[in-house]
Length: 610
Image 1 (cartoon, helix red, strand yellow):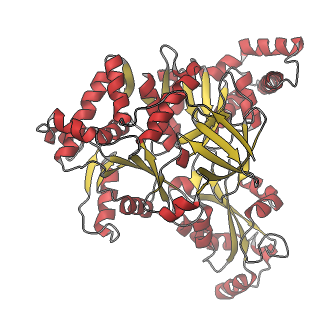
Image 2 (cartoon, rainbow, N blue to C red):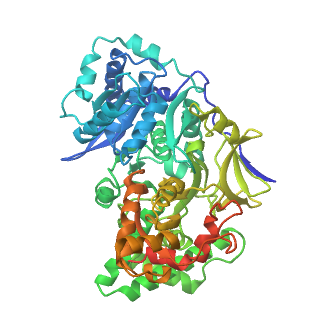
């Protein structure tokens, strides 16, 4: 059993919590710019002192409304400055933040509110307020307790952020301090819901200690990114994702200016105007930048030149990476000359896509392809790939500028131990590991062994402590955009249709979720009879548009169970009979997903061809 550890760099006072990081930042540099708030007129700078004042005003409003220490408060919104303001206000009032993805379905929202006990919900606008109100009025799971909905847009009808601050004017600073300081490092700061392989999402209890210790230790661990004068970054990942929240706390602790972009659609324009010095991204963003550069070259008649520049970047980065491992001499003079030429002609345009000032990028949430990793390294946009889960407060390993191996997800963060079990499962112990699953002690007990969290992922540790992910033990898909998707509920719903014998949801590392469907011969015969058409064989049926049209409603129904980001966008039929004999089912008739995907890789690839 191989194991790797990194020693803790910074201790934390047990009596403190996340809000102490904000107070400390204000004492050190009250006029330092913590946030750049995007407005119709450009980016508006927000100092630490201004942010603290606004956070305190909202906290007073929450306290005036009856919020007690430990009470859960939900937030349903795109990433925004207001999301951050509300998050810290909840903590300042002693509450527990419960993030909800803005794309969540009504059933998902209902479950999270019911399971967490949140009876206050911040929503981004009138549309979200109406959706939540309608859900609350119809729900039986939420019981009789009233649910307060607060809009986060400033010009909305009350209750909104302005009216919330107004009702708190009678609350004293002493009362705020009493509630703020009630939580210690061991107390829960946030309940973050993550998709499981089966059943309903589980709420991960992330403590103040998880956020504080990760923040204090990541900063000296990555000084090239986080301790540089003028450091700034743009956050576009959903703040419902624990990685985005963890990075946000890191930036506040380090005094880094942070801006918010609502999502990938407007990201390129925001990068150009904000000009970050480092960027947290997911593989899909790198894929889009590469595709955009390739398309621009094609439109200008320079496809051959871009292909040569791309190949040179990959070759150059590969040579450098091998040299750092002691397995090569590095780039030769001819390769160096080619690389230098393209570094003048084409690579600056790639760097400009990230705003022009990015020195490093960090990629997480799902694997980045080796080609893309080497291309961006070679083009002067180094990618530091990392690894983590919601249960580890996101990062538990990462490559650093000084300790980096492309293809790996890096070395353990300070205060973290990574162990690979005999069966290859990655086990984690350390400062980011969560407290447990909310209200689910059985699931909590099942996920720990000898004090280590069982990730469900498979990996290998090399002799220098670099972790490489080799597969997934648990049945959970992660798209190229970093969205975790549990396939089982979708598959179960699809199989309810009489025409469908088996459904295999795919999308690991891909831009969207899709499905492979096999037809049931008996159901097909019955359907043909009902439609009064001649009998079709399975081979004929998969090519028949009438069959495809008949199956589409089943896909639509399955998609109602999940958010838009988790929904099935395309499907293809497979003609083979999936059975125990064929090796695609277990003796108990459970699907062997990896076997199906391996045997029908050509069909999977077809789903993602443009």
